[in-house]
Image 1: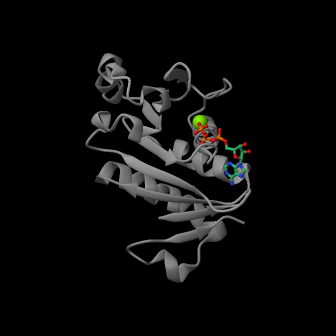
Image 2: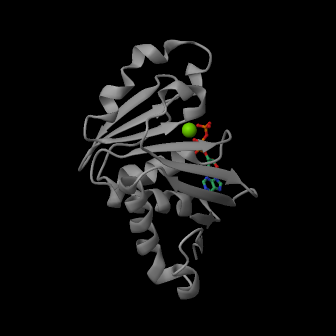
Length: 173
Ligand SMILES: Nc1ncnc2c1ncn2[C@@H]1O[C@H](COP(=O)(O)OP(=O)(O)OP(=O)(O)O)[C@@H](O)[C@H]1O
Ligand SMILES: [Mg+2]
């Protein structure tokens, strides 16, 4: 699924709808260049999980934990690149803890990539324009994409594209 956003608030809104749809046990990998909007999306996702605390970038501490309807584990692997510290992280324990794991810069520690995940890639296509590409590795995470798609549909989706089985392009108003 491809979603275009035109402002930080729209990217945050996509995150919020994803957060609403989480049932626990999801892993969301966020790829994208510096400043693409990974943390912005996570802030929305936290809101969708009912987290009331302010979500800030965890870059210097690798993991921040937030309490909402479900626990949110917000990882940033940016600083792990080449350090070999990944093994110390006990990442698997978080994946199986029943909360929601969000990982910025998963490619910095590819050895930690779990089997099941939703991969959300953010591309910067203009000063305030972003393309969000979502792909699921399994049925559980595909359900998240389907729920997001359904939540966006009433306002934005063209019925002819909604029936497409492969890529769906959605433009937020
Ligand atoms: N459509 C948009 N979606 C998301 N962010 C946007 C958008 N347009 C502009 N921005 C701006 O881009 C920046 C995104 O910053 P953010 O910290 O979320 O990026 P990041 O991907 O987490 O970066 P880093 O790799 O440094 O962690 C913010 O300043 C935000 O206001
Ligand atoms: Mg960030």
